[in-house]
Length: 328
Image (cartoon, rainbow, N blue to C red; front, side, top):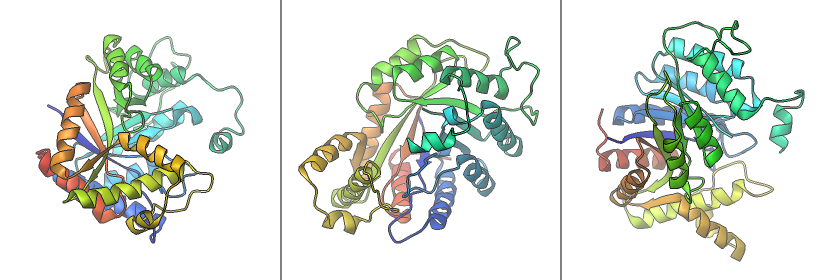
C-alpha cells in the first residue's frame, strides 16, 4: 500500500514575509498530521530569496514540537557542505527529543563557495554517506572514527533516505542499503531506469532488508480546472524566476502571473517545466499520482503543493487527502 507525505518549501508569498512563511509551514504540518499524511518534510534552500527554509534542522525542531505523531524530516540536507559528524549529532538530538519521528535525506556557485570557504580537501559524497550511516545507526568496526560516538547515545535512530535524480545517487543508496527518494518533480524523464537500477543492485543491511522507494511530485490542485490552471501559471513564473539572474524576493501571485507576458524562450521553458507538475482537480491529480506511483512501484509518494498562497497550499493537501483516501 502506498503511503503519502508532504514536503513544503516555506515559500514567501508576494505581499507576505519570511516569518509568515515559516508560520504557514507550521500550520500546514499540523493540517497534514490531522489529515493522515505519514511524513512532513521541509527543504534546504540557500540564496533563494523567495524561500524561507534555509535551516531545515532548526525548522524541524519547531515542527516536531508543534505536532504529535507525524514523522518530520528534511528533503534534504546538503551533506557535501557539512561535517557528517555534526549533521549526525543534530539529528540525534532531534531523535532523542522526538523518538521514531525523525527522517533525514542527504542530497546533492556562490553558495557553495560561502559554505566551504575555509575548508581544504573535502570527502567524497559516498564517504560522507558512509560516515552518516556509521554515526547515526550502524557503527563500523573498521571506520576511521570507530572510537568516536555521535551524541547523544539513544535507543532509536532517524530514518535515512538518499535523495537523488541520477544513477550515481541510486547506486550509492543501493550499495549502502538505504531508502531511495527519487525527485520526479526535478527530472521526470528517465526515472524508471534509475529506480530499477537501485532495486537491482540493492544490498540488504541491518538498516533495511529490502529496497524502499519514494517519489516526489509537484501537485497543483483546485476545485476546478480553471482555478488549478491559474495556480499553475504562478508556479510557471516562480520556476522561471528562481532560474533567473535577479529573482524577486517572493513567490509571485496569480494576478502577477496572469498579467505578465512571456518571451518565446520562456514559453519553451514553461512547456518543459509543465512535465514536472500534475495539474487539475483532486480527482484528476490523484489519478495521475497513483498511476505514476504504480509505474515506479513506489512505496511512498511525497507531494509538494508549491502553489501561491498558504490557503491554496493547505487546500491542495486537503483535497488530495480526500481523493487519495488518506486516513489517520
